[in-house]
Image 1 (cartoon, rainbow, N blue to C red):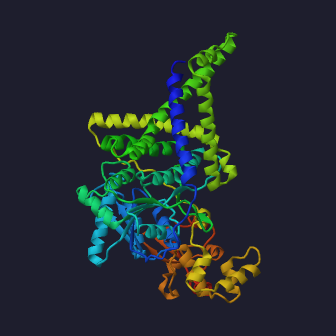
Image 2: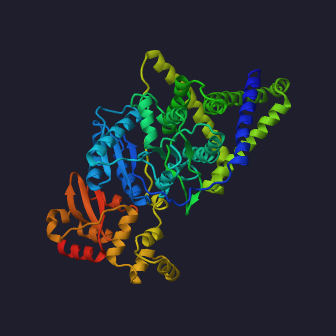
Image 3: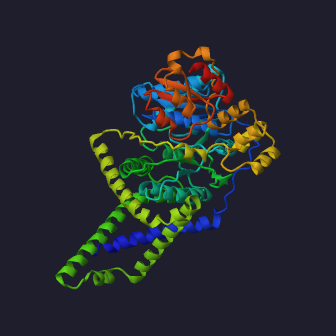
Length: 581
């Protein structure tokens, strides 16, 4: 029972600390204003994507984001290790298909650290600049599972006219109510991005990179290279993103966050799936605790002014808080066990009286009120992003988060201590990634209306009239074709722009007989997908429309080849089918 006193003191102090940030945010940071629609010229952006065993998701990531991004001047540089042959093969295919995609091959086997991979991507970018006579003005960091918001690069371009580093908010994609582990990420990131990040900026503290959606002005990275023997990203760090926030702040770099607010129908944020089971989440959080807390403490100590020290304390108190939570949970279990024992023995349960003598009533009341406030505020943040029903699960997910963070903190301390004892480097443990389904992706594509008007396929008045007269269940694009506003060729171009899919330009005589019949004729006509090329383990098929979800799974019953979709005008496709089959 005596252990409850220091536990209560810690919970009270930590709760007051959180309340201070809450009040600061309420007073200074609640207003959310996006950068004005960019008047700044588009500067050339290099998007870095470090990869390790990402062959299953990287093609989807590139194709979706190529279609979604409302920005013209960018290139992807994909970092890959030579011993990751499946991913290397997938990336080389993407490089051959997209002029803005480039392979950045590390000179050694992996995985090393994400920072090491990023450094080699930077070298590949410099080689590209020498070969092409170009210069990239902005470096933007992303991962293989990211959905980049259509306005994200544009907001980064705008803010980097007056800043050196910009962080786009990062939010978890919604998952079913019952997925508690992923729900923890939804809750935590909603609160962190809406409260902590704006509060940090408002107080003048350093802004840690989130690892994705971070934009750097080229000049500040050159400065960083000069001060660190060309190590722009620190290879020894497991969380190079957090490290770079500290390093750049130490160099006097100006840092900012993009306000988290709605841009059209969606939140302006990078969206992704985080680990969806306890074990995968634990692996990721061990790395976060080891890098953000233990390595950061070891490498940087408590440098900086009072505000800097305060936010270092907030970041690092999590490891103590997780251990305290574990001790509190054990104390609760002990209380339940003694209560059950006394009930079975018919004895008086004396623990409440002992605790009351040790812990003042006001402390218990204060910590309880702070806990209820913390849960209520997190429910509010989660409700803003994911809806009121999802927010109702916050109290249950908070218990799951406590267990996850407690185990991660203990494991991180053990792992860090073992590495130091043995003199071994800490290794980058890559998190397994999932990429969203087409249904989830559809919410993050460029709005069809913007494409139609921006590319001069239709006037706004024509679209309004078409929406007013469109029958239920009919796609807007199909209705525009039926109304004579779009031609079939125009429709294919619009779908290509929206979905990031190439347009097939093939004649019947160019399709080998065996290739054209790689799928049964009934499957071709039922699903409207015609094979026209087989190359390096890939079956290329043409279709007049985007196939429904699940079609590719059906097609895999008839072929073991990877399937890549091209679009074709319906009339041309139907004529081709008649000639080939």
